[in-house]
Image (cartoon, rainbow, N blue to C red; front, side, top):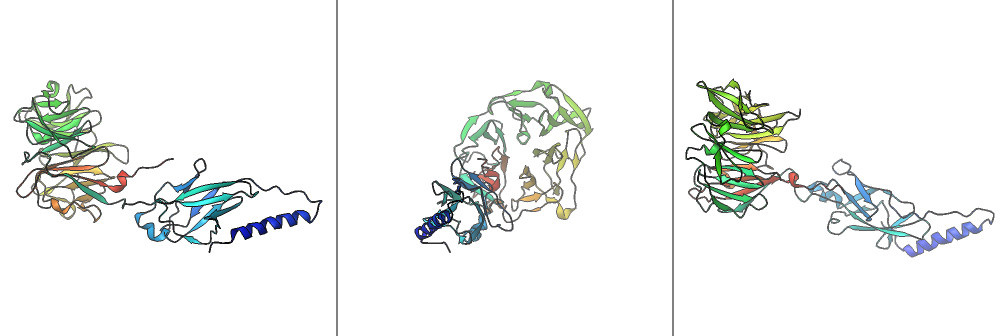
Length: 427
């Protein structure tokens, strides 16, 4: 219970000081501190965890940098302040503050708790605002939003490929037309005529390296664009390209034909020549390739890909683009067959989807796969659909662009695991 009748208590406190000083004129005067700051603040544990609080004396604010779990509202609505260190005493709403009382701190994000610190000498006061920050969203949930019902006005009806270049999503349904939108919007799409791409372009081969989009053709040529619309042949590497496999930080990886054999290859940084490696195994995917490049826990740049499959989808990985290894596993833990798989390294895990889009599959190391848990599901509207493309932008949003089909529009959806969008406050 908070102690009331503060004026009576303070008068008694003052009287005690006066009487004490008069007991002996020989005693020295006691000097009380003029310190009116809070030196330490802590609340009881939340789910067994301690959450540190920052005391900002410059702005008279107290808050936790790491937000409490979204479900902690049922705990902090009746919680104890286990540490409150001051030189004098503390009041709240003209009442002496008692740390033995439990408090409702669940609403302090909207209306902070006001505490007033009184110095021991009674000359100074300082008002503090206490805010207990709590996540309003489950940090581990994948939240989806539909951005538009029709990004291509129904023009894209079949297979498509999307890439992100200069913070714009570029989606191609053919070699002659592209649709683009800013990653900061996603609702307003622009149709653009594409020039310079030949009719035999393998649209599924589109890949961004550096500041350019690259594409391979059926005739083995390599084309590039710096703006998404105007394309030209990259003659230095052109002529024998079978497939583009990955964009490493300093080189472009591919499969090239030489002396009647398909070989793994890697370009130099200037994209002037190919260095060839091992012969490509028959099981290696060459169509509908989806690639993700990431830095492993051992700080190795790693490419991870999957492609068209009729039995089961087996991802492959490489550290240099010249040698690739499959991540074969038993059928019960493998990815199901997908003609156009989408694979990504996201939130420190591997995610994959495709096929009938009934599930989002997740793997810790890219070997054992299982359907994602309830917090990271695909929207139910995806099930049974076909023909889409997907990208991940720099803000950790997953974008999925759908082709128009019978009973379904060319929608655009955007999703993100909530914690990847949380702003870390280092104030």
